[in-house]
Length: 151
Image 1: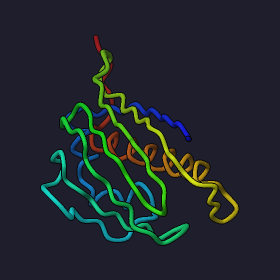
Image 2: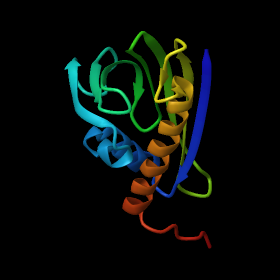
Image 3: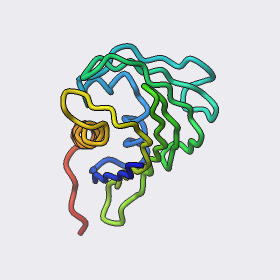
Image 4: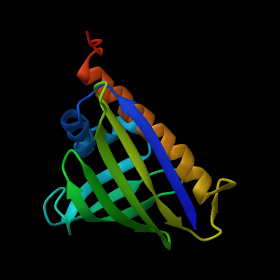
């Protein structure tokens, strides 16, 4: 079992951070691995809904995401499955007293000994998570504008 966590801080409010996160049409800007994405069951961001995400590289596959928790602007959780692997992931949006938002993700990945391009799945997941969340943070900061220091 691979346990993971990653945190970014953005100038965006929790509401804006959620708006950027929940707009899956922007996800291509955060990582260049995506093909088609669609909600195959239920309504977007509704508990029990399913999202299918096509991954084009490093291996072509489709990840099935089942949304198990969703409080917009606060938290969400899902279970994802593909290639015989299962991942549970949570994302929290916490307002910072200094302004902005801390976005924290964590979860567990149950994977086989599968290697892709010489890398283990946990290694690929770690690189993907850092890339995705850092680019997400940049998009949030760009939309939020510069932080104004408190007087």
